[in-house]
Image (cartoon, rainbow, N blue to C red; front, side):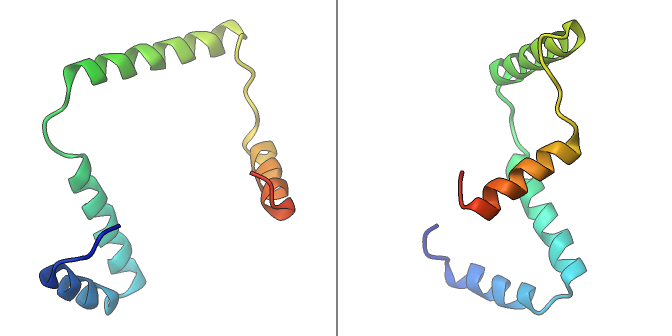
Length: 84
């Protein structure tokens, strides 16, 4: 990430003085603001098609779902062993 403007640095300094709850809310709002704006219709259609494809694979049994507990166990093991 690049250098911040003086104005952004001032905002950051003030934000760091906020409570954890307020900082979390601020972060969420800033992230939301990055996602706002005009959408590319082609991208929206591509995502809709991808979602349909994945749902079809799940319903047909082609895709095997892994329970959340198993995913967490595997991820923890990878992190513990230093593998990615």
